[in-house]
Length: 285
Image (cartoon, rainbow, N blue to C red; front, side, top):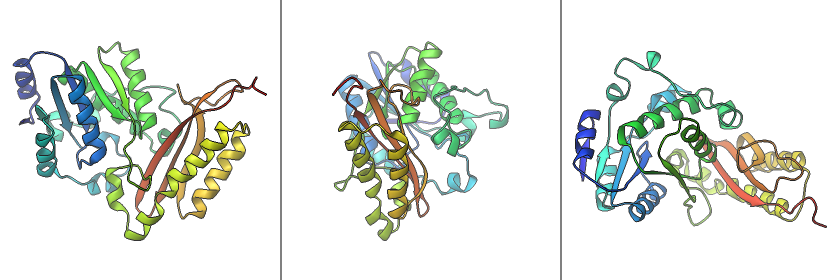
């Protein structure tokens, strides 16, 4: 596996290859969820590129940026073992050579608003900006993202559609621990006691999704109960919401494809998760 940091070196390395290219952008501190994306990428294309870049533009708190784990050497070993062809690991100076303050930004309206967009102002502008730039640098045929970051996945899909970028966006199912907790780099912030309580996030989401699937239709009541269950489990919720799966809009009576989403703090860790669900048609008895 070759590793490069400079965009010019990246382009030169990519120019030497041929064939379909799959791309997995990450912020490093890799876990089994990331590696599942890499393995799926390997099934889709003969060339696989992974990027590792802790993007300061998408962090809304300086202390969160500083605390984010940097484990490049370990990550590189994991990726080489998975057969990755090229690792792009730029520094901030490579991505924002004139500084972030004067760098062009990409904003994706509507779908980036609310939920994590409301809780983390500017986050999705940072995400869209870096992903758009990485797509321009790598020029992949397909890019893979985990469904755990459901709103992020929809933001990227809309950006690609609106800007007519020639990239297929593939969402990959969330990889979970045996107790249901979604794998995340932020799980490392949990204390042993918090780690024992963390699976309650997924359990509450599944409970509400099950009630939707059985035909319950009072969404505000279900959202309020979900918030209450998280608080009773020791979480500090940012939100607990039921939305249309296609665009995160507020569901109407006839919308059937839904997603239940939540973000909540447990100690220092802000955890997110979601469950997709199909509810019975309003016309069903």
